Structures are given as C-alpha cells and as structure tokens.
Length: 276
Image 1 (cartoon, rainbow, N blue to C red):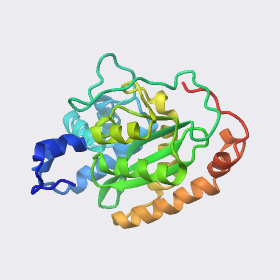
Image 2: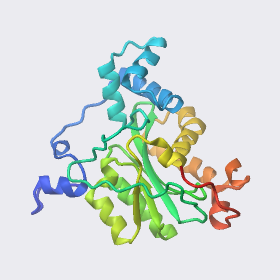
Image 3: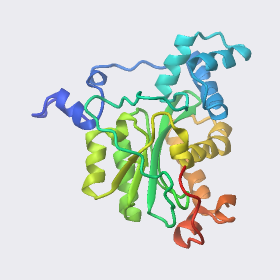
Image 4: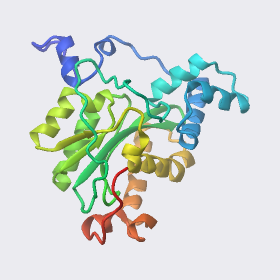
C-alpha cells in the first residue's frame, strides 16, 4: 500500500492512507496460542455483554478459569478493535487531524433502499490467527452490499468495499459509520465527498447509533463464525461468501415481514422504524 521509492515521504503516505506512521516500521509477530484462545473468548463475551470494559471482561474471564490480568485483556481488546459500548462525554478521539462528522440519523424515517448505508469492522477468529471483516449494509433492507476481509485495521479495505458497493448498487444519500480512524481518514472521506454523499458518524461508543450493523455482526458470528474453525484466510473468505449469499438471498427476517434482504432491497413493502 505504501511505496518507499515514491516522491511522497512515508509520513505523508501514512497520513493520506489514514494509518499510523509507526506501523510502516513495525515487523509483526505471530500471536501466541494462549492469546488467540483468550481473544476468541473475549469476542464471544463481547457479543453477549457489549457494555463490558477491560475490568469487567477480566472478571468474566476469571470466572471461567482464565488468569489474564486487566492489562493483557485491555491489550487484546485493543488489538481486536473492540471497546465497551456506552456513551461517554468528550472522548471522541479519531486519528490526529481527522474530522468527526455529526450523527444525522436521529429521528430520521428510513423509507427506501439506498437512503442510508452503514459501515463497520469486526474481529473474526480463525483456528490459528484472526482477520477483520468490513461490511457495507443498506439500512432499510439489511442487505450486505459489499464486504472485505483484511489482516489489518487499515483504511484500504474500507475504501475498496465502499467503491465496490457503489459500483454495484449506485450510491446512498447518507453513509453512517463510527468514528474509527479508518472512517475518518482523508482517503475514505474524500471518496464519500467526491460522490456527494452526506456523512454521518455515531457518538463515541454509542452502539445504538449503528444498531443494525451490530445486529449483523451478532448474526454472522452466531450463525457462521463461531461454528467454524477457519484454517486460512482463503477458507474464511469462501465460507463467509457462502453465508452472506445465504443471508442476502434466503434468510428471512422477522423485522422485514419475513422477506429476505434481497427482496426488501428490490421490492420494498414498508418503511422500517426511525433511527434511534
């Protein structure tokens, strides 16, 4: 993604990509088996108790026989890209220099496909290692419009997924995301502005602001990820592709009057409730 021979300095390249300059010089080391086991369980507990911070998470883990201290639990949660989901005041800290946009969906009636899209990233455990899944979701129909797997929490896969979704499905009026550095990066914001898309961002830690994506992650993990032990990134990609095809084309949703996301996207019957 970066080019050491380019006329732009590495610092400037990192700034444009929305990644840390330090990451360009970091030589990643494999995660030990004990940490992978711990992270897998943290992910499962986070789905059940999204309000649990590192202190509570440590207590939950110790009830199950894990001996990890709070610092180790906190480091694992940071590596996974998760945090306790609760409102905080004045703690929104995207990457330095990145602008945060206001939340536009409060009390907005979502009445049609492509009115609002949402994006997010989640941690996906494998048998030996882990990856991250980024998805673009149509808020009205719950249809997954595009997705990418990545081994790092960087901007590139997010932009790729967004461009893929727009290529296949047009563009939304509003794109909603959290305040993560990937979604506040110069490259991601430029892609939205160039397409004349309004930008909406959740309040810091306010999971209800992007509740449909949180429900999507829960569905994917309980119906697909936690039932598998992917032995490679390619195996994870192929298995997730099969599941997301099923999710879009065959899985009925009670909130959509029994329709599948594809049916709701192509032939909408009624508006869904207003955003939180």
